[in-house]
Image (cartoon, rainbow, N blue to C red):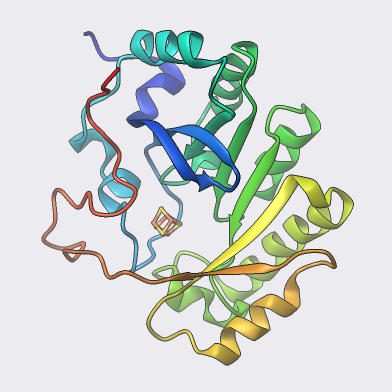
Length: 227
Ligand code: SF4
């Protein structure tokens, strides 16, 4: 396979079937490389920060899978890394929608303008947004990639969209080391009415970002696809 071009070059993992990633739905998962944050607790840092060390996925195999399974899959999850940083991500979502499948996208919420565009174009059905913690802790929680001010501004835009379209968003927080119960309560207080903050247990990454070349522990981007 020659190296895929455009947005498909960012597809560095594919999981055929997940029963839990999109609550209440069966979905396959497309993993996109690249991320704008540097969370010290990241499980997918190889995908997020060094995607070229992972093999690209053959677009034709993913397309064939979506075509053949569209009848019984409930939808497609697009995750990362951070999907909203990927140039042309809308084209990928459009292609999936043309196959007749709804789309859920995971995001850290730091590119609300991309979220707004995808919502406005009716391309993404649901956004699963990770709230990292209180805004004051974003610099520590994101490897200094985001200031408190930027975190507040970006997440406020996300929460405004969620208030206007409650069914299009749900929110999660991972109780990483350094995040107290009081911090979680502060993060919960940011959410608009009708939303809950789903608390996820933190599982430490198997290796540190400094020495790992293959941390595929949790939501592992699969290099090969099994039909
Ligand atoms: S936002 Fe997610 S993918 Fe990006 S560095 Fe943080 S944990 Fe990793």
